[in-house]
Each structure stands twice: as structure tokens, then as C-alpha cells.
Image 1 (cartoon, one colour):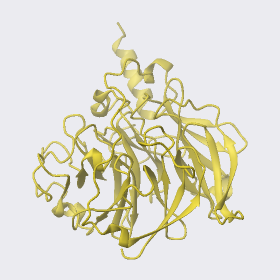
Image 2 (image 1 turned 90 degrees about the vertical axis):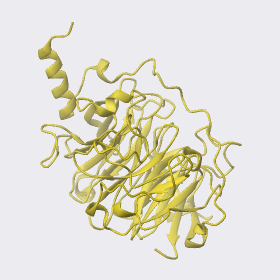
Image 3 (image 1 turned 120 degrees about the horizontal axis):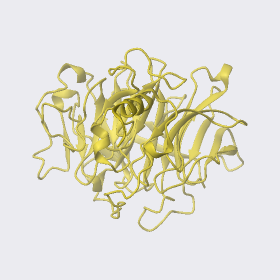
Image 4 (image 1 turned 180 degrees about the vertical axis):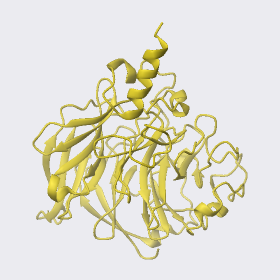
Length: 404
């Protein structure tokens, strides 16, 4: 039996992001099967969201584009989950009018494992000087975060994040405080979400060297919030409030307001549960119209992308979220019959409105572009779109909004 001292050492290694033994993160014999139902639910004919959105195609012919970030010249840098390619998109255009697509790297260290592979990417806030990208990727043994200068090998800064064929999280983004945030899945082992000694099922906050920064809620830990199942989207509003879109199991998908040290309930709660011990999402919807993968904030609207639901949601925000985050008031109807529920006293100003339903298939990443638009990626070559991909898939879309 492992000694108590060894157990303490293992916990310390996990929490500080140092390299971990290979056995720590490996997940075998997952108790949860891969999802098998990818059919989308019906559109809401009364929604009217399409009238608010204008869409153009920036690039096409990609293969499951997953992470997106931007360079100082306005070019997008995009990862492909399964191929390990890192692509530069734009800022120039090709003869067809699409942005040029150029491979700038191929990560041989990543392992394509169903939902695992080369996932999130974030450019250093000081990219002009340090030329550094941060990447989140799956290996044979774990998920990890690394620094990458194009043309060089990745330098891991956090290892030992649990991995599985599903629920790998994977989003990376720099917050307004200058620190790097990462979303991690529970790798289909639900207990890890509540275990502060595990990096799975968490939102992590770190320095650019992968260390816990000042202000983290748990001493010597990267953990910023916990009790997550598979969060894939991270975004901030103009007031510095942080949001995460999270993929639930079979009942509810979520939009959460992330606050330090809070417990978001998984696996005890899915959706708006009203239990004092846990922090409820500010909005939730059924997986057949959801599977919420990405989030971006544009003015007073949270834009949520949906994989299985093949649509986006426009969630109106009234910026009073922190005033009553624990309010029990819920709109949208009872949990037993509602398709969408939201919390007016927690800052959602009205019913989330759907748009683009089934027009572009499965929608994954959403990110604010330097020109004020949103970039959204499709995920139609991941084997989960009924009927398969179109000739143009996968695509990068540019969204602008007529009203906000």
C-alpha cells in the first residue's frame, strides 16, 4: 500500500502542475460509454435569431478545427484535433476570396483519441516579443499544456491532466488579468470533478510557466473552480466576469458564471439544481438542442455554440450577475418539461434565442476576432454529424450581429 507521505507528495505534484508519473493521468476501463445519439432537436420557429446574424465563410476544407487564437497581424491560428496541424488563416485572401490557409506546424506529440488530440491554443499576450503559443493536447498518458514557438518542440508546463476518449475539456485563454486559464474535463471519471487533488473537471488558472499565481482560491493549486464535467468554452465580458460553456451528460448543458473557489456541482447536480452547496448555471438547455461547446461575449450577449443541437444561442445579459448569483428564481418552466431554463435574478435578461439552426452543422469554437466579429468553427468531420460532412467542411465562419 502506498504510504501517506507518498500520497501527500502526489497531491502536491498534481496541484502545482509539475510533471507527473505516467500512471497518474491514464484512464482505463471508463465506466461511461461514448455518446451514440447525435441527432439534433427541432428548431424553434418563433426564435427569430437568424434576423440578428450575418454569416460569411472565411476558410473551408479543414479537419475538425478545435482551438483558435489570433496573432498581432490579425491572422488566426487554428488547431486541428485529429491531424495535429496548426494552421495560419489569413490575413491575406486567396483567389476565391477565402482567407489563405497555411500549415505552420504539425504536432507529432499529440495523440488523436476520439475527443482527444490537439485541442486549445492561445497566443501569448506578449507574442510580438516572445513568439510563444500555448497549446493543450492529449498524449498516450495525459492531457498537458505546453509552450510552443513555431519551428521548435513544445515545452510542457502542466502535465498529468486526466485523459480519456471523451471529456477532455481543452480550452485555453488568457484572462484580462494576464493569467492563462484552462478548462479540463473529468475524463469520464466523475469523482475527479470533486477531488481538489485532481486536475480533472476543473477550470485552472496559472502563470505562463504553469505555476499557481497569486489570488488562486486554493493554496499552491492551479484549481480556480471545480465540479465540472466537460467545460469547453471560456470567455470574459467587458467587466472582467468569466463565463464557461459546459457539456452535460444526458439531461442539461450549461452556461456558467465562473467565480473563484466555487463548486459547480458535477456529478451531484446537472443543470439548475437549486442546492445551496453548489453554484448553479445561469442558463441550461437540453442536449438535443444543445451540447454547448463554445462561448464568446459580444456586448450584452453571450453567444453559445452547439454541437449536437447544430445552432447558436444568443443569451441576453443584464450585467447584474454577481448581485444575486445564488437566487432560486428560475424562468423557462419546471425542470421536468422545460427545454431551456435561465435565471433572471442571476443576470440573464431573457430567454436564450437560437439562430443558424442546422445551417452549418455542428458548431464548436467561438472567439472574438480583432475586427469586432466572431469566428466560429464547424465540427462536421468528427464522425458525429448525421448524414456526414459537406464538401466544404470543416469551415471557419465569421459572424457579425445587426443588433446586440
